[in-house]
Length: 500
Image (cartoon, rainbow, N blue to C red; front, side):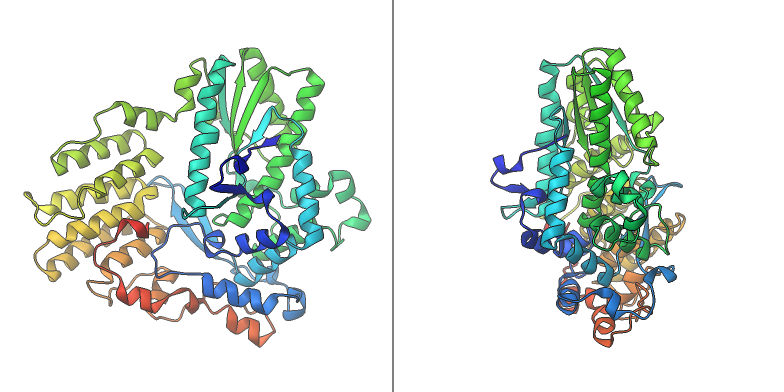
């Protein structure tokens, strides 16, 4: 596996280009701790920095009365609806003490050097390229924005380029990757299976792989299956296991004498380029065997082959959006075009892009030539069916509500929206954004989501800290610190695009 070379672009670096101190600073950024889109008054900088100050130079084990894994609610989990129906993805706010402790351990100089050396071993085969290592922005853009730009240039554009050399593209991915990762496999990946399985190494706290494994078990009631989703740190840890898959796959392919191929991997998504369908089938078979050996499996439903490499290099929803009529002067007809696209490609990235473009049409509007309520209904239906669009849809709603004549009517419509989403279980993320819309109208509207309660100044325990004995650390992980009341009280009624 060969990593991409972000250093060629001065605006971004790979995490592997950082020193241990730089990596620590990067992973302790609030946006690295939580990658979920949240309103601007929910901030983690003070929380993470204060925990870092308390734990620096100390071992977390010396500040606790019992093991965190003895409690089943150590992390705070909010379920994110994936499809507007029955599929949910858990996003976790890792207990700050466990998060910071793990960052400290990983970025100790010797441990960081071992990790870098292991990634160099993962990268010996330049025919398999990992393109999903966390990216550090070197410009005014946020790290997340640079990660998106990196995907576009290194995955999509590189895929189109490879049509010059290959006639077939096979796409596949790992089913429920984060939820299925066996935590012991992190130890295997960093120290090899042979070393990790030696009796004397099973409890070796000098093995950073063991330390990572134990921290994750502490977050999950002692479970050894699954890692938390929702942070750059866990994205990086998943790359350790996925890097081992790349390494073992390379070895299997070499033994079979298969050399005419190129593989681009972005997290658990694989793009396999070949000149023979037979070679493609053989590679998928070997990849299946490799992932199975680590307790993971490929998704048959998402495995597909094409002899049109250029067209297949661009996601189908994006290609369709590019080639269709995207807008009209009429605001309702424009929304209906987006709604139709969202029905055909639910939860797709192109739906978010389309809604962003729509939003840019309306901030400066002073008057609507039509009733805003049908527009509101269409936006709500898009959000209802496409949970990925919650943030941008609530931004659009915040503007459309300004065209309702009275505050009483606005609140009535907001209540109708809230009741609509009550029909879908586990929509905590939408509650957080609905609160952002309604807070400037009436700050007394109540929501059940724990983060919303904190915004309302209601005491809420996001993560269980009963296992902590040190008073200073226990005080430092107070969840109320994540709400900046000054920002909250100063927010505008209309959500500006920069908030998203």
